[in-house]
Structures are given as C-alpha cells and as structure tokens.
Image (cartoon, rainbow, N blue to C red; front, top):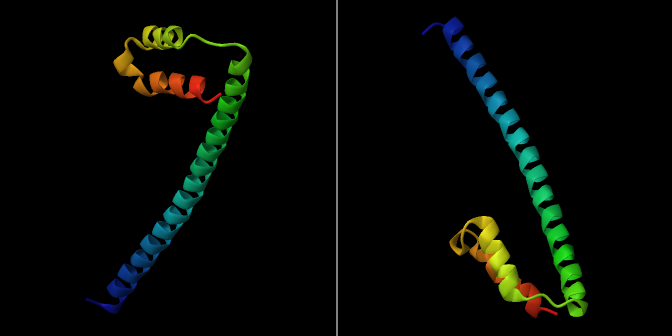
Length: 94
C-alpha cells in the first residue's frame, strides 16, 4: 500500500475516532438531562405523596372505592397492580 493510501486511511480513522468521541459526549449530556428529569419527577411525586397523606388525615378515603376507580379507569386490576398497591400505602402511611 502506498504512503498516500496509508495517509488517507489514517485520516479516515482519525475522523471516525473524533466522531465517536463527539457521540460519547453527546450521549453523556443527554443521559445527565434524563437523569435530572427523573430526579425532579421523583421529588415531585414524593412531595405530592406527603401532601396527600397529610390531607387524608382529615378527609378519609374508602380504599375499596379508590381501587375500584383505578380498576375501571385502567381496564382491569391486572393493568395497574402498582397503583392499586399504592392506595394501601397512601392510606396507611398517615
């Protein structure tokens, strides 16, 4: 292989390496953004849960009625098992 061809291959490999490095930096930035959004969402849900628990002290809710509502809205209890479990968690964490 001639020096010219080797030089061309080396140049292409350098460009590929640079592109891979840029992709890695972009991926890391995007991952940081997603993780930040998940953290914000978790904090929001936790605060909302705390407020609901405090409100439930004054205004009791029928667990069976809440579970029936979830079941109806989701098309069946099998479609929202975590939501149904959370009813008991919220109502019992007063």
